Length: 331
Ligand SMILES: [Fe+2]
Ligand SMILES: [Fe+2]
Image (tube, rainbow, N blue to C red; front, side, top):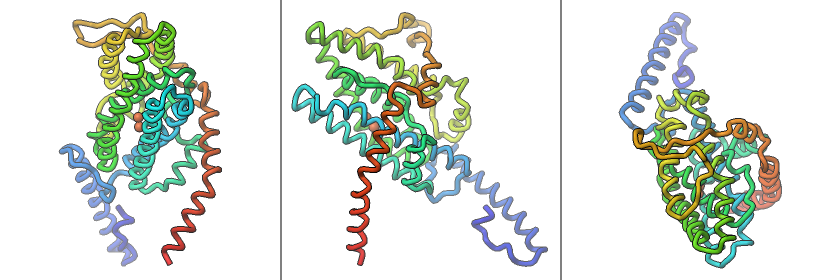
C-alpha cells in the first residue's frame, strides 16, 4: 500500500512509475493474503490484510468480547442465592471464567489496532452490539442450569468453528476458551439433570426455564442465511467457517437428545426427527422478537447497559491507582 512505501516525493516522472509499482504491490499483497487463506495459513497481526477484513474482525471479535462481559450479569445475579456451597463455588468459577474470556478476546482484538478503551466506549454508547441472549432475565435457579446447558452449548458450537478461523489470535483464543465452555456446559446440564430427579416443583421449574430460553438460544446463531448480509464475504475469508443456519441445526441436533434423556420437553410442537435428512425438523423463530432485542428493546437491555456503565464509573479509581502504581515503579 502507498503508505508503506513512502518514496513518492521524488521527480514527477518517477512518481508515475511508483504509482504503477504501488498498484502492483497492492495486487501482490492481496494475492498473498488470498493464497494464505486458501491454503489454511493463519493471518497474523503484522501481516498485510484488506481493510475490510480488519474491520469485520474488529466488529465480530469486539462483539464477542462484550458478550462475555455482559454475559456475567444474568448469572452473577444468582451467586448470592445459590442453594449450596458447591453450587456457589461452581457458579463463581464459571462467571470468573467469562471475565477471563472477555479480557482474552479484548486483547486479541487489540492486535488489529483498536484500543480497548475505544471498544468499551463503543459498547457503552450502543455503537457495538453483544449477544441478544443476555438481555433476558434469570428468574429462577434452574435458569443457571439452562444457561450453562443451552447458552454455553450454543457458544461451543459457534466457537469450535471459530477455532479454525483464518485470524491467528482469534482462532487460538477459541481453543482455550472452548475447553472452559465445555465445563460450563456440563455443569449446567448436570444441574438440570439433578433438578429433574427432584420434586415436581423442581421439575416444573426446570421445564419453565427451558420454555423461556429455548427460542432465544436458537437466535444466538444470528439471522437466517438469506438475511445475513456479511456472511458470504466472511465465509470466503474463512472468518466464519459455517453459515448461521448450519450451526443452528447442528446445535438443535445435539441438544434435543440431551433434553429427552433427562425428561425435558423442547417447547416446539413442530420438532421431529427426519429420517431422510438425518436432522431434526423444527418450527419458526420469532424474528420480530430477535430484532426488537437487537435494537435495544429486549426485557433487560437498559438494565444491562446501566450495570456496565456504573461498573465503569465505580472502577475508575482502581484504574487510576493502577496507573499511578505502574508509573512509580517505572522510575
Ligand atoms: Fe465464555
Ligand atoms: Fe461460558
